[in-house]
Image (cartoon, rainbow, N blue to C red; front, side, top):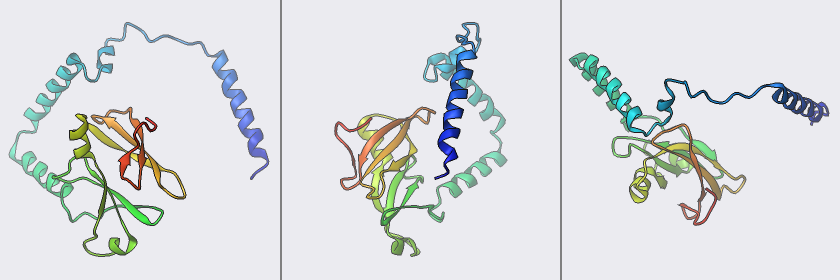
Length: 183
């Protein structure tokens, strides 16, 4: 390890603390005319979104757009896509969405299977089934698994695709969320 790194980090931390102490804090202004948009699930914000969507739909209602939209949907839902994988331990993991699984499947396979034309995938987590079971609208935000065994992971999910997400502890051997685990 570079012997200068600890000193560098201490200097950066000291500088950040001094800067924070010298910077006046300001409260969020109540005069922000768009503050109501922060309530992403609120009626007023959703009405505004629906109105913008209606404007876009009226502009994009011609046959050329509908044809392009259908072509793009067919490409995005095609099984002919190459599944991007990441290696964890002995397995290769992929998060897959298609027409039948719009929220997605987290799955894994071996290297030998991945090299074939039609790999056999083992299901790890079905987000569509999870949403139905929990009455939620979870969107995949990724996973972070504990090395080197990869037996525990934190799965990040967001409600409806919002920026904020919920991290939940996941047990890989049982392929289930840990009861009373980290949330």
